Length: 364
Ligand code: NAD
Ligand code: GLY
Image 1: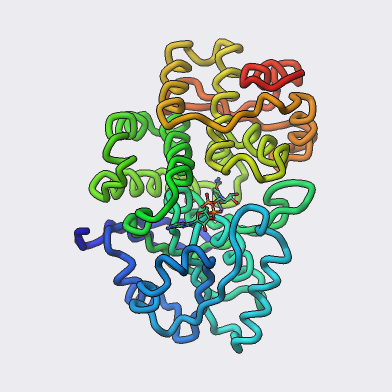
Image 2: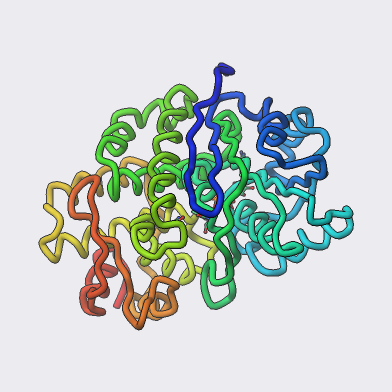
């Protein structure tokens, strides 16, 4: 593993600007990065048994002062109860308002730990050290934190920006293959919705990327952080432009909820959601069928998605009616209009949606 200087990407969100540091070997310098970001001497690190088992020693060597709080991860643990465990550990560890919380794990740890930091004593400082590809390219950037309720995903949360994000692609070496692939769907999401050159780069370098070669991963992760950073800097609280990042998420969230968060990984559900959005766009004549085929080909190249053909399309519609993306009774959909371009529409009918869901193989 090379230990070059990390790439530094500035995220200029109005509530708090912060750097994202991307580089192989960044974990060995995490203590310095956290100190330079002003986290102060009272630091707590929230991680999961899996991540801490693989990488806790390395983290601890680089930042011996941070007291570990270990909580279970996985989507079904992303609940108010999970956050409560973090509050309890902070209280027990004597954390006051000068404390800082570092999340060290995937998107679940980042979202739960981030929400705990946003709310504990009305907000303590936060840093993210993401350890899945999905969290490195998406969840750790932009300040969305929160948890699920039985009625739906991410229904309780906040916008709360970290002081720094430290990304080391080296930690991805222990990530299960399926989890790694789940992150690649989010990379494809950025490419299709916002950045044609990123889409081409990923299609071209799929071999080295799937071998997790840091030389291929660093520029792709950095490109995703730049794309997301620019979007959230322009629309931190998702009043407009940020909605484009929800490409693939409307159908995706419904499928996740419809399978009780047990069958599909978040990235896989986004894979299905992108296919559904392409079907909708293409049926409306907004997306050329050649572009639809190219996007579907890139998604298929990552490998098979878990089956969803036992699910009822009508039941998924019901989940979508409760989605956060419903505004004034209308569901907002991000539809691609080409590779690297998309539009937000609010007039997708239930008949169109049912057709797109059946296109994915769902039953009546
Ligand atoms: P995850 O956090 O559940 O992690 C997936 C699995 O990988 C877990 O079992 C974890 O223990 C394991 N793991 C993590 N790092 C590892 C490593 N380096 N080596 C070995 N195993 C490792 O899943 P995820 O895909 O990272 O995140 C999904 C969550 O992120 C969802 O809840 C989603 O809603 C959220 N999300 C949030 C945002 C946001 O903007 N806040 C964006 C996208 C997704
Ligand atoms: N993952 C979508 C967003 O952060 O807005």
